[in-house]
Image (cartoon, rainbow, N blue to C red; front, side):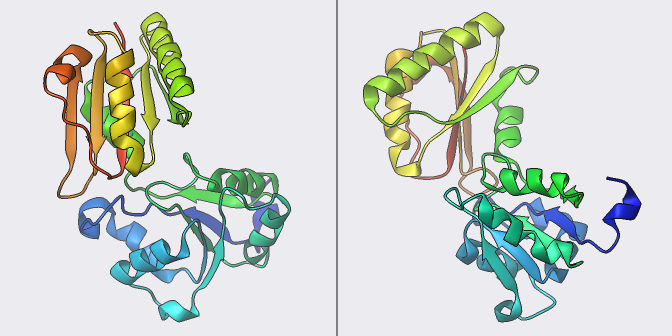
Amino acid sequence: MCSAERRGRGVLYLVPSPLGNTDLDRILPAGVRQIAAGLEHWIAEGPKTLRRFLKLNGTRLPLQQLKIEVLQENTPPAALERLLSPLEAGHDVGIASETGCPAVADPGAALVRLAHRRGIRVVPLVGPSSLLLALMASGLNGQQFAFHGYLPVKSTECRARIKALERDSRARRCTQIVMETPYRNARLFTALLEVCHDETELCIAENLTAAAERIETRTIAEWRKNPLPPGENPCLFLFLAS
């Protein structure tokens, strides 16, 4: 789609949001905050979380006057066209994830893909990405890595998946990144210690960018000697087999 065909359409801004209770000046550039403050139209996975962020950030219009649409995992594909209608009418729109970067491990990806197909300009804004922050700080292989999202809930399936990922990590020297619902963090941590080989390195990246941030990388053998599971907080697990 050439630039002439884009005229009259709005811009879809991908607006990163805080990963926790963090001073916005520490994690978001002034230009990003200025764009977010000026947007009237929003698409959010969690409107309550978005309003909390915008209250801290500040907005040109009163919060109650902002137009916020919901986009979640179970949003039907047919509804995506409607979500793009303000952009087709010339309004800029911000899309925000529940936390972190929209469209990465987030239902916003489907809307972004459709925006490209409709010739709408998509602009990613700078902000915290839990995946990259954890990988940067882990000391594990940043040249070859893969994010797998959530592992199976059932214990036997989860352990089988961990074994498969560890084999793949060893074969390709690939850092594997997974996540879990906070209340199941300790269970996943236990499964990793039970399944993985002694020499496999495991990083726990918890509460990234928050005051209680915790990032620790040890071998499985070292973790077993002093197991300190993450709490019920946002957490990523990264492991690399040798």
